[in-house]
Image (cartoon, rainbow, N blue to C red):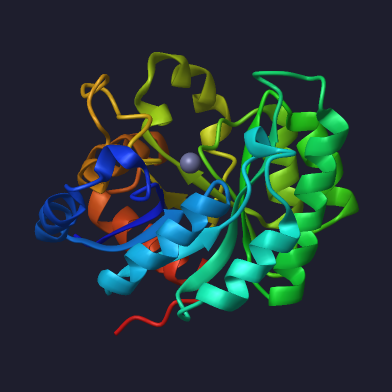
Length: 257
Ligand SMILES: [Zn+2]
């Protein structure tokens, strides 16, 4: 089977010095593509630089809501122009996160919107992070839609978010979170999301799936996530892997070699 990790942070310092080894192991189990995701200016530059070294690594650049006020979208556009090697395929991860603080909601929403506008100007899709902020995510995306595709990363289905996704044809990415106990609450929504709108991700080095909690997550764990998803969707792993792989190439507009 072939795998596509739509969301990983090989630019995280936990991977310093071991990226070669990790990506080699991933390749051996069939991981063909990885999207390396930035979360501020520095990590976005590092993501692009790493992609110069690894042929099947593509990149998303963006400012995470927890970095609001620390860097500007002008800077992000500047590095797109300066560093772009043709492998920047999305703006992300961007979005809203009210889990740390709700006091800067307005700033977070402004930052989110400005980055959606940047994505629209650059004709790129967006990868969205949304945590404890589903209503405002819904309202912001309604007011300021991304024209070239929207992928909801680390998707935890709720009534509102599933409706948003279905009404607008957004893509959703499931990761290690679907193996956690609390994911049982997802099951009533899983039937509602068509496989044509699903991809998989790891969010490495974070969110390792059960039974690997506490370890550094890598794209090697995609088979565990796929297996869980195939149980939820009641589709064979083989068939599902082909569908989510094709969905990923299409979403990021990558031509397979
Ligand atoms: Zn992430």
